[in-house]
Length: 405
Image (cartoon, rainbow, N blue to C red; front, side):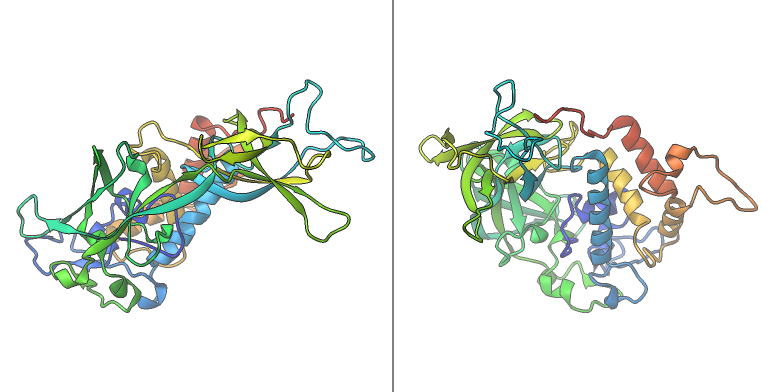
């Protein structure tokens, strides 16, 4: 798997697909058998895990950093993540009365509970990101469905609870406790009855030791079984609703704050406006029971845990980013890395095209761009302007469209 210590919403393998990078080479894999993997473009361009493994070249770690920075920049512009994401321990100040000599009681003049404006809109659900081990050391079966002499498909099967959501099931490198940086993705998950079948590609399962050590220019041999994992850990990643919010009061007689459990009710999901209410979790009903606040006055601030982000109508699974959004971000991220992305001529030409500054006038060409585009937050490279125009036209920022009360 093309992995990195920096987690990205868009899998690195998806970036490679969108940029037209050979998936074998991107994962540091090659095959010595030219009949199995012919190099039609005469370019054996092996990617490394770290920059020090190939001086002057962009590594997968470098790429992940740039991709994550772009994802966060786009989220700040749109006021929601580009794909469903969990937010933990976000602190939101409670709406206070205008007069400094009075305390609020948690209600607004229309006798409705006061609401909070979250950092991100497109609210999905309240709760904590959680993982549960389904099966450890699940065996991988490599197969050759096209009968070309190379076992390119990896298949795993595990027993799950009936009705389990396929999007919640993921495969991970063994021994990493389901840390999201070690998830092998993308992968196709289907659930029939109580059996979940996961299918991915062999080149995504390169041994951790091979990724972390110095690789030769040729990478690892794809036909050598010893270069690939034989087992994976299968986890369920889901939203645990038991922890949604915490009221916090600053105390005049103690240096420690006082807290109380609470839950969130959505008032405007699109704008990320929620209502925090004090409550206790009922394990029998799997719901919160409304209680009274421990203090007569409103809390000073609220810590919240929730999931938010864009769910693309065309994405197969709600944890995936749609192709259009992913392509725009991949193009722009390619302009944010420092160093040579690829030795291949066709890749170099594409990256140069994305990096072209359309605000710069030369002796041979000039471009006309308006003031709005000239001052956009993504810069004036071709990829930056393309990203900005598409976001502005088709996915308008939420702003503060709804009123917090």
